[in-house]
Length: 292
Length: 249
Image (cartoon, rainbow over all chains, first blue to last red; front, side, top):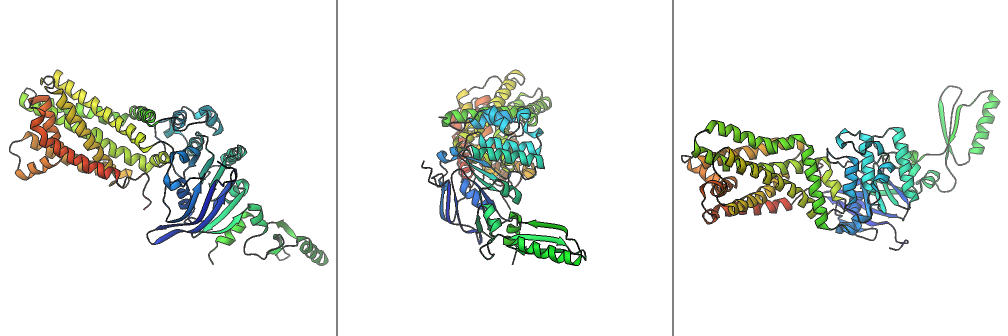
């Protein structure tokens, strides 16, 4: 397989459930070795799109290629090269992680070592505990482990850290980064904007079945779509003498700060709680997905 | 390269291990028919005619409970828990997966029939089956028929909490009608018609011929035809519209 061929290519994808059109013309290209984030509110069409790519659903129209295969064909060859972490995938109640991984490993031609994957997922100590006795976070790590056991080239992560405590989230992020370092391609859907900002090389913001913006998080933050081009947007905030919080937008913070601080000094006041910030991905996201 | 047959075998072994680790399932599979046999045997003790009816009836019920009931429960549970969807996303082929699941059910049926036959010989004085070949034919036909019907019926069950209600709503009436008509010569005509058209009574007739009365297979071809028709009906609906995941509505 040629490295120049994208891992995922989606053109004019549509999916209709009866009268309802969940996906209305999505175009996405995910390059090999990149972590691609799919963001959007509930009902935006993220999961439908991902499930079409995973081969769970058939599209209504459009072109889709995953590692050079049409996922609707459900070929074994393709399934041998992808790993899937579902939003909610269950497991037998009476199986242990070590047994599950051994069993899952037998599905794949070149699986990874069971012990290595247990360690990667942080389940060394729970290897022989029956799944019904595992905590929610441990079960989620088992989901990761089962998706990775086949040594996939492409990994789908559907809301992988929902319900994690902060430490577990950071551990999961480390796992994702180590996967990227191994050259894996990752398609991530998430509700957590900081997660996308931390992990994704590029993101697509989806709403009502369409892509609103696409690009590296850094660029989307610097040049939010819908704003006049040129310049980076900064947000300057402070509390004025009357105690009111004031927020100003600018693409030239040096000049604005100079004006503000000059005026304050002239009045013999202080700029309390002064902060200069750049918009986060969350700001961009909220602005884009806000209902007009 | 893992091939489909090796994976079927692995799936079968996993299903067996999971079965034994679930004590309540093991109980329902093995202890319940024994309790039925013991209770029936105690009530009918000394009445060889009735014991001759009891043993094949329990054997038929065992086939139905290890396949129809067990598979309907299992499929709904695995579907609602998302296990089926997860497996669907792996390279494990459908044929290997269901081969393993069905093999597990068939093993339970075989074990139960063995227990019932042994109990018939040792405790209830009906001797070894007269026609082993006929016994195998009817058990296999019953397994295929009721397993397919169980998988098909799972489609109709909307969630795991209601599984017991749905399964018992079918299992109990079918068992009662079939037992009653099989045992009683005075059963009303319409009830007899219903029982003969359902697959359990023909299965019990065939098992009775093989285990007790010694009538040969050719006298039970109509029974085999009824089981076969239900089996074809079950297979069609088991495959068509099979759902790998929880319905979202």
